[in-house]
Structures are given as structure tokens and as C-alpha cells.
Length: 151
Length: 151
DNA sequence: CGCTGTCTGATTGTGCGCAATTTATTATAA
DNA sequence: TTATAATAAATTGCGCACAATCAGACAGCG
Image 1 (cartoon, rainbow over the protein chains, first blue to last red):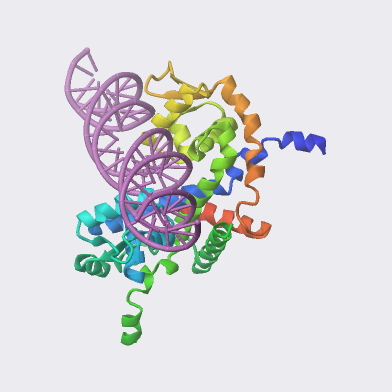
Image 2: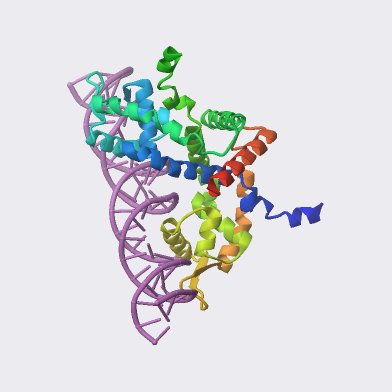
């Protein structure tokens, strides 16, 4: 027993035994593969996620938007300024509460949604997994994420 | 049919229907949670991954190391310089091929391995999943990663 | 009214992450 | 044996990502 323990002393810090490393590597690879289908829209993956939130939920304050896409103000503020500079969104203070910044789609931003519907098709076969495995993976990730949010 | 198609036109770009978003969000959250257990070692998650590769495989060229941890020279070069500046690794050109840069652990870097063995314990309950689910998740991610690498 | 504390974003600083380009070295081929 | 091509890192440029800090706005209380 002691022997086994000694032999396995470093087993837990082997790369191949990590769960988080493939998670981290897989996420990076997927984001990298979004680049091509997103290039006609001239959006990064993160910008695409932000736009999806706005397409789905309409106008949101920066805080609400940050919750949806899980980004803080340090990332979101400059990103939103870039989207505003391109005329895709507007940023305006609420008159009822000047602290809050309301993010809304411009017409140009709304129109971009039409091009965006083709992105998921282009990404369909990105992960070489069966339909059942994809669902299983999504379910596990959603569960993991929920578990981490509530703690 | 046409009706259904029209109604579901934007279904695929809803945040909640994305597979890649929870993957991306989950990976970020996990990396964030590594911060605390890694702070005694004064390593970022990426640096930890690089050190794991060196602890496991010994000396590697920058190129080989990059393959193991899936990082390119643009990320790796400055990261390795920071680790070298802290005395954890050495960087030296091979005399047989001056293009290649051999990365090796210093004694200090080797010693850090002893502290690192406690990191996985601290992260054990990070993901609120059953043992079986964790294995399933790892298996799916490994498969997805393999599938993306070979294409 | 003025004080105090909280709320909401903005800013700052450091470190990835990666495409694209550059530099230096080695291999090859005319 | 020079040209030429391939290789391996380094550098550049831009955009996240996030902790920490800052600043303005609001709410509530004396």
C-alpha cells in the first residue's frame, strides 16, 4: 500500500490524467475553429457570444449582459466599445439610473443576425462526436457550470 | 413545415442551445478556480500546465513542449522567459541544432513538483459531478480533442 | 441637507492566445 | 558550392480575461 502510494505520488499531476486540461485545450481549439465561419461577420468568438445574447434577449444593461455571457466589466467594457465603434450596438445611460448602461442593438446589429444563422451550420461537424455524445457532453457541461455558479 | 422552419430560424443561435458556450464558460471558470490552489506556487494555470509537461517528460524542445500543451511559440516564448526569470527552468540552444531551444527544469523547478502534488486534491470537488460523470466528461473531451487534432 | 455606504461601470496592469511576420539556422538541390 | 527552401523560435499586433482599484451615482439615515 505504502509502496503503491509512493509509486503513484506524481500520478495526479500527469498531463494525461487531467480532466481540466482537455477541457481547457478543447475550448481553445473550438474558439479557434469559430474564426473562419465568423470572419465574414468580422466578429471574434467572444463578440459573437455577446451578440447572441443581445439577439436573444434584446436590450440589456452591461451588468445583465455580463451575467448572461459570464464576462466582467474589465472584458466587457472595451469589447462593447469596439462593437459600438462598428455601429452594431448603442451604449446609453438609463435616465432613471445614470449608473446603469443600457446596451441595445442598432439596425445594423440586428441585420447581422441574418448572417449569423449560418455559423452553427458551418460548425456542425467541428466536433467529431455522435449526436448522442454531443448531447451528453452538453448536458455534463451545463451541469458542471450550474454547479460552479451556485457556489 | 415552412412555418416551423420560420419559427425556428434563430433557434440555432440561442445561447442556451449552444454546446460551445458552456464548454468555453466552463473552461474559463475552472481556470479561474485553479488560481487559489496555485497561488502558493505563484503559477498561472497555463504555467502549471507547462510545468506538468516538464515534470512528466523531462527536457523538451520548445516545439515538443508546444505540442504537449497545445500552445504556439507566440504564447510559449514569453511564458518560458518568465519561468526562466524565476529560476524554474533553463532555456538553451542545442549544440547539434542551434535552431532548437531545449527547455529543462532547474533544481528549483524540480522541487516545485513536491508542492504541486497538492493542487489536484484541492481541485477535487471543483466540478460538482459524480465520479462516473467526471470520467464520462473526460472521455468525451479527449475524444473531441483527438478528433480535432487529426483534422 | 449632508454623510455614509452601496451599486455600477470604467480603468489599470499582467498574462495569455494566436495569426502573421521576421530572423536565424540547417537542409537540399542545382 | 552557392542559391534556395524548409525549420524553429522570436517578435508584433490585437483582443480577450480577470483581479484590483477607482470614480461617479444613488439610497437611506441622522
